[in-house]
Image (cartoon, rainbow, N blue to C red; front, side, top):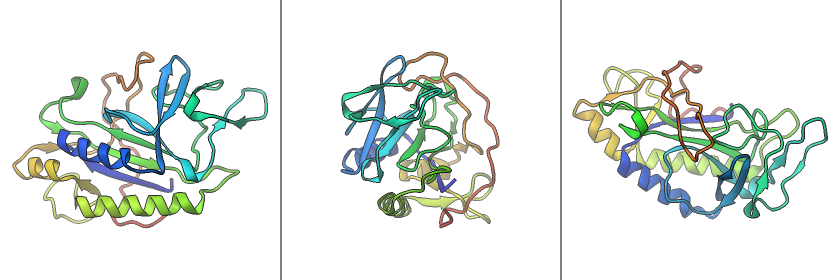
Amino acid sequence: MAGWLGLYAEDTDVLFLRDRLNEDSEIAFLMPEGPGRWRAVWQLDELLGKTMLWHVPGGPLPLLRPGERDSIIEEPFAGWEELRPGMDYSVPYFGPGWPSTLLLEIYTRGWRGLRADVIPLSGISWYGRTNLKGPSASTRKWWSRFRGWMRNQSVCITRSGTLDGPQPDIWAMPAALRSIRVGVERGDWPLVRFPPARIPHQVAMADQAEVGPALACLDDRE
């Protein structure tokens, strides 16, 4: 994985992050248009749940074709039908990872059945490359800029124990940080969530699961 930024967010933080991405001229959101259909849009109203981001200057999106050679989605903003869906049908599938896409997972306290007394661990993932294609220089630069923005807006803390303990690796956005400082519990691991129906951003109740080693907030590895 080229990168993962873990973060804690309250509702006002999510609005702030949404506005940041809505104003980004390089980022589009890949949204459901019905069962197996998707469309790229430049702005959205709700950011909660899972959202696939497309870094438009980073290159086109692939249309996976079972048993045939893959092609390119010619007009993502006009919409397309997915021919080879993935296991998680809450977001479009482009294979194990596609260099110009990022997966944003944003959860807040009490959202759709989540515990109201725990701030869930959210995050944004960028795989950066496939076996055949690496990321463009423009997407690398965007990822670096976004990490810088997060660093300027948030404080790097630990997932448990004292906030300034060893190996801090999660960004706490302003409202979340205030909540945590007054004693609100924070989730240790990302949520594992697969939706039960093809409804935008709907998620099923699921257990928390450990997913790989922690990375420091300022880790520059790709």
